[in-house]
Amino acid sequence: MLEKNKLMTIDKVRKIIREAGYGDLATCVDGQPRVRPMAFVVMDDLRLWSSTYRRSGKIKELMENNRVEVCFVGRKKVQVRIEGMADISGGPEKKKLLLDLNPKVGRHFSDEYDPNFVHIEIVPTLVRWTEPGFGEYHRV
Image (cartoon, rainbow, N blue to C red):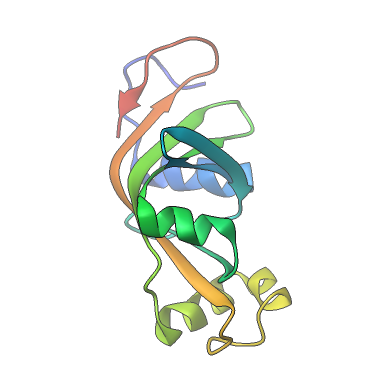
């Protein structure tokens, strides 16, 4: 278990995100939080990549307010929360890389040119973590 006030490295954050398997993405619409589980690929700089269908309700939500938060819980119940800005403008190059990094995306989209395929990129503005229980969050 992590020691209190110990700095968590970016590598440890990436490990927790990978072992969590998915994160809960929170958006906000007219003051109402909306949360849903999503699978993410974590990039070296802690940007999170995912995909969705163009007709998904979250696309409209992200177009209206791109501020989001994603919460991950690792096997040892360590929580990582990433606040950030969602970018849904990723083109074929990013979509192709996402298909390569996460082959499961290919179950939903034929290729990087599929008109229904939207690439979501969360650009972190704040990354925090906490141990199991009711402890304080620490910045990464």
